[in-house]
Length: 143
Image (cartoon, rainbow, N blue to C red):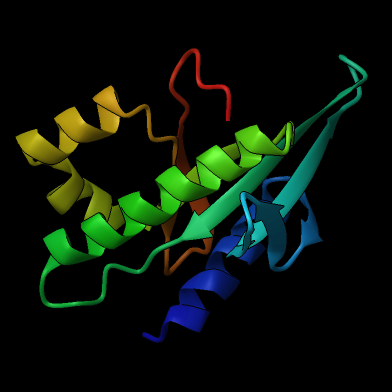
C-alpha cells in the first residue's frame, strides 16, 4: 500500500474519532527550516470548553528494514518536536503507525525502551477499519 494511502487512512480515522483536520500538511517554520508535518487537527471538548491540538506524522514502515524506517521516523519526530517547541506551538506531536507494525516491531525491547525514554507519543491505527486503535501519550511531554 502506498504511503499516501496510510496518510488518507489516518486522516479518516482522526475525523471518525471526532477530530477536525486543520492542516494537511501542517507547515512548520523554525530555526531557518520549513518542515511539513503530515496532519494537524483540533478537538473541542464541550464539557471542558477547551481545545486539544495535535500534529501527526504518519509512517508506513514499508521498507524491508523496519529499523531503517524507525531511524527516519525518530529523526523527523525529534526535529518536528523541537520546531514546535521553538515556535511555542501548543500542539502535541504524535507518530502514527499501523497496529501490525506496533504489535511486532514496536514491541522489541530496544524499540520499546527508545519510545519510552524519548517520550515518543504514538497514534496506533488499523488499515482495514480506518480507525484509531490506541493513543499512547507520555506524561510530561510538552509537544
